[in-house]
Length: 394
Image (tube, rainbow, N blue to C red; front, side, top):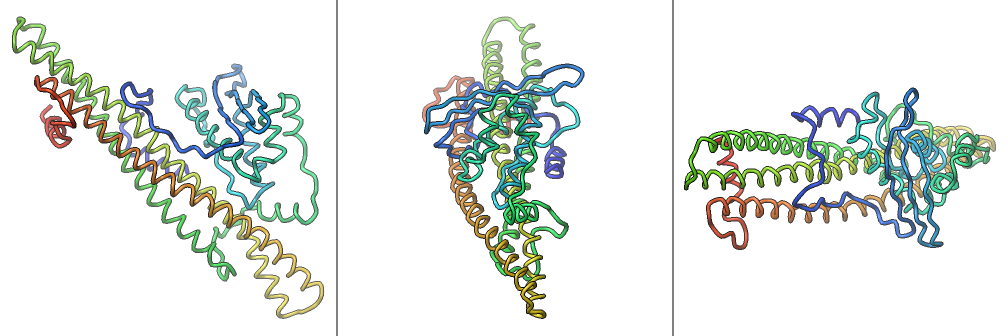
């Protein structure tokens, strides 16, 4: 993911504006349906000075038994939970958490971003039929600090064959997610599909970042032009020219605020959703990578069983086949469900954002119509092309 973010940020002129929009509602970032729980990670704050860390308040309501829990957790606790789930449930698509950073951990913008992403992580975990019932997850959202620390420090016990399967699947080995001769082509096809989607989404994110840069450039132009007009107005006597310039200043100031809203929307909502989709594809690919060692073991024992039909070799082949089938069945079901949910959500998201874009230009048009002394009826009289053309004159 770091490589993707580096590509994206290479297009950025400066950090995007992240304030809440003043005039247009911030569209929802994808959140899975958590009918059983409501969870929020809030109040990110710096704790301590010498060995400082960021603490978050995790608020969870269980709708089935009406219980409510509020606990404090730090980033390393989320990191531990994420790694625990990958080992305990290797065939599940474990959602990602925000990546670790070397510096800037206490910047307000980063802490707010992490709180939002950690909320999304817990929502996905809790709405999952397997991970949501995991004992460590329930301890994470409800236990006091002492009990949670004891659970975190506890070593996992041996569970025989299932534990061996988990350990094998959790060890990511070189060779990627595709294995030559995979008995189930569906997984190889899914790996190819995920790669194509990730490339396409990365290109979309880069395109959106270019739009953000362009809008930021427009904001700078508007700011400079407003300052020039105000300076010139100071030497003018009251009259028609002064009034016309004042109207233009008001329209420019309002348009600048709309552009700032658009930058916020593109950064938080559009790229937020697209990057989240990339994260999810990477989580699916991680499942495919955890499956790959089981495929190799199965193929190896199958070859041995064909050349040496001894009971010991046949037993290893049967065990490898059972391990692969168990993992594959669970993984396929999880991956298919997530892909179906994501496709439906992304369709809804782009439809909603299309309406937002229409509203954005409608508001811009009305402001310029006001400045021209005209009545803005339904829809913008000043088009996006006209606005763009006027910008080039500044």
